[in-house]
Image 1 (cartoon, rainbow, N blue to C red):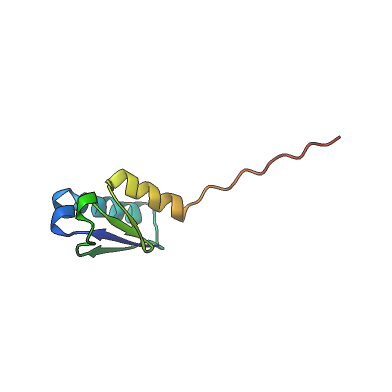
Image 2 (tube, rainbow, N blue to C red):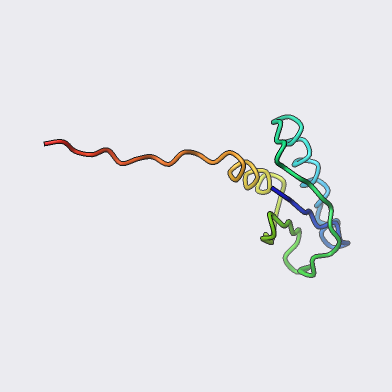
Amino acid sequence: MKVEVCTGRTCKSRFSGYILTRLENDKKNLNLKKLILHECPCTGNCKKWPNVIFDGKKEEYMNPAKASKIVLDTLNPKPKKQALKKTK
């Protein structure tokens, strides 16, 4: 999973660095080898900061906890519950 955290002036002023730090810590502490982190310049969506791009999909109004949840849910999906069949 490739994650790009916007470090443009507006996003940086809204603490996008904390998002990057949180994801780096998640990668290290949870051994997320499939997680690729990058800083990226302005994404051009400054009104809805901070912005993070997850595998090409831009997410707006991010915070460290939301970004971490998206990464963990994507890399460690929960198994779907199967419906029990009724027997006669």
